[in-house]
Amino acid sequence: MALGRPSPEPVDVFIVDADPAQCRALAGAIADRSVGRFSPRVCNSPAEAIGVARDGASAIVIADLDTIGGAEKLGEIAGPTRSLIATSARGSLNTAVAAVKAGAVDFMSKPIGAAALIERLEAAVATWSDLRVVPQPRSPETRAKPAATEFAGFIGASPGMQAVYGQIRRIAQSKAPVFITGESGTGKEVAAEAIHTHAGPTGRPFVAINCSAIPKDLMESEIFGHVRGAFTGAAENRTGAAELADGGTLFLDEIAEMDLGLQAKLLRFVQSGTLRRVGGSELKHVDVRFVCATNRDPFVEIEGGRFRSDLFYRLHVLPIHLPPLRERREDILPLARAFLMRFSAEEGRGFHGFDAEAEAMICGYSWPGNVRQLQNAIRRTVVLHDGSLVEAAMLPESLTGGRAAASAEPITLSAGQSGPATFRDQERRIIEAAIAAASGNVPRAAAALEISASTIYRKVKSWSEPARR
Image (cartoon, rainbow, N blue to C red; front, side, top):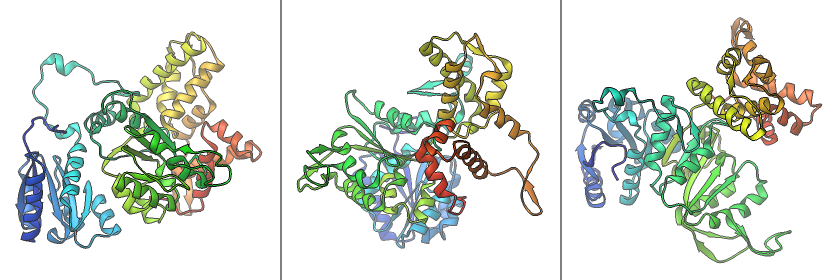
């Protein structure tokens, strides 16, 4: 399947490496293993690499960092129709992070295995967005056709969501792991289910685990299962999520919050495809497609020692980033209307739209909780009120506060410096105020804010850490 390309022609792969032996090895592996899928071409100097960047062809560039002069030189090779894979014989976490931040979609330490190389090339092609395909001339009727507003549980016609839809379509049938990033409430589990649904025949299992919601000492048993007597309370054998997902998809939500010790065991499972139940001795082979998600910056977590880099690079093969709702404001009102129709039908209400002031308030709010917060706000409105049109006064007070905050005077941050408060500071003030109003009862505060108690505990813990940038 020619992913992300308008024709079945081979994908050009430019190898930028000053070592002739390395070039021959990579080119030979690509020619022998890809069965015409990729067409290798060797470049021995940065000058040749720059020439490749100017020729305008869609391609993958495998660039040795020593040859081009370091990660900072990747920008000279980059182009709108290229995916860069950085390589180095002196691979380290810092080198990999620098390469990815400079524009590489992947990093590989030398020596490079042939099978791993082909897998990374396929993953690189799968990340190409629809914007990389040169649009063909269309008729006036085709040009007038609006973009899809609904896709596999998503609602939105913004460019950001159209790119997400295209990525899901292209990567769904691959067996490579998918790594989804995005803020809480952006729909990471919806994306995981969409990937699973588009992957092939129905009936295959989809098993999801929230790594932040299960106590650390029970998490291993949840994933791998246990045998009777493995620990206190293990009264019978139990099948874990990995076995239940055999033949389908295992979705690990908020994976960055998994305990480091369990991350090592998960890495072995990802590498070998075999697992051992807690307290057991039998090795079981399981065939699953891994889809992971986190609302944190994985590179910050790696640098902080909270997320294993080897596990990350095993799972971060096909990345998808879900944009926050504030970055796709044209989707806010269609989402609100869809939720209004759904909940009005469920609750037996007569709403069929919003008045002008309510629409302005909904569209002008920042929605820090993203789609989940919008959904909860509309549902609360429908449960508490009735009528033909939702009026501004019916909406939750948090929206009025958000509109007032948007027009407030700049807040002083420090002596001699003024400007709007950071999102981190505003979020902290809101959570602390809710906890105070609930007399210290965190679950009650969480219910008022329409978030989970575990989120509040995590946020409170993060306030003692340096602000992430």
